[in-house]
Length: 270
Ligand SMILES: [Zn+2]
Image 1: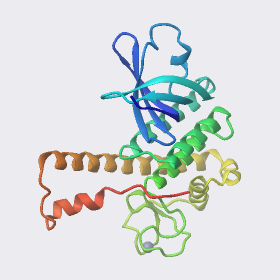
Image 2: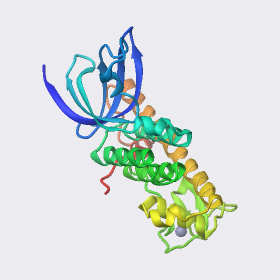
Image 3: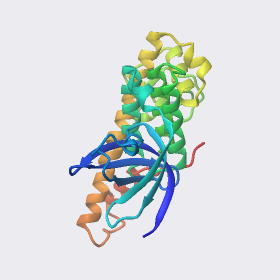
Image 4: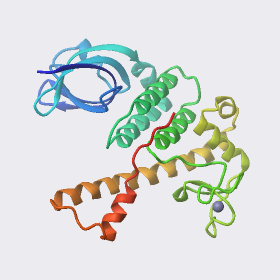
């Protein structure tokens, strides 16, 4: 049976039978992989300890009939202990792996892998505030998935910024002409921080005050939730359509067209 090797970050695990565990991993080259780790719950297994959430490992697998089987795991980055020691880091890491799991639903990518590993490593070393690290991760993971927000030019018409109205459903800041009536407005410091988190300008992000961070976090949470829920809904809708109609519906069907335009494909991004 074919054997392959890859680097992987563990997103989540769950029990399988008495002694085994199913491990969901985002790999460097093979996208998202669900695989069985056999016997890891039977003893204090070192092998099992390398396959806990947030761990990065060099894994060897063989292709099984339904699920692949992990035969070896060597730790590359054991960020789990440092992350679990700190509640803020732990909750941030959980939100990261859950988001990584969602944005790679259709397909994983090297960029998503590197972004997640980099964010977990930074979190474990406490390089920046945990909430800032999470917010930066979320904005960049969504951008890589095809949902890049704008915090400078109008996200609807492209009019040069800065703008103060923020509408997550429209993709970030919008100019006065595009802003719906009653659109929430944010101060320049908060919008500046959002831009810094998106581009990874840590000098500016680290210098921000708590109140600005908290306002920016609210925007990031709303933006993430809106895109993930919408993304998931549309993906579920597509798979149901595919199951129900063995023959593709007519191209003129507006519902089909809506489905086609709603599922945004990941696009290459640095
Ligand atoms: Zn505009």
